Length: 119
Image 1: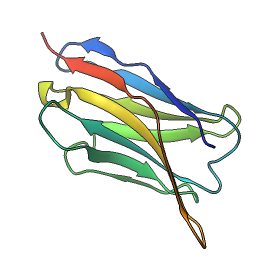
Image 2: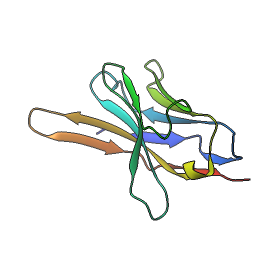
Image 3: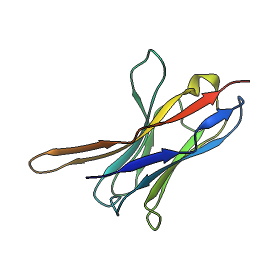
Image 4: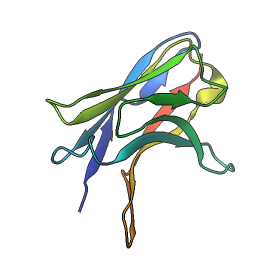
């Protein structure tokens, strides 16, 4: 069982920055694809950024150039650095760990952390 715990959310003004953290139990980066998703009220959950088990990252168009995903293997933690935040970035942000095994799919979620961008 993979456990994911997000932290770092909060209230920030437009143009500000936040860094989200997702702490995991055990070393899973080498075998799981990690992702950050968000869900705003009344909207579907959407992918924000992803990091493959090999380390490559990808970003949704609406955060490219503003958000950066990284991982610290020694701390078993992935991060989402969010800069130039906009009110439309307001959402609950979730960490995800995903792996397609030979027989079953492994798909784990954290409980989320609230990010509110408002003046």
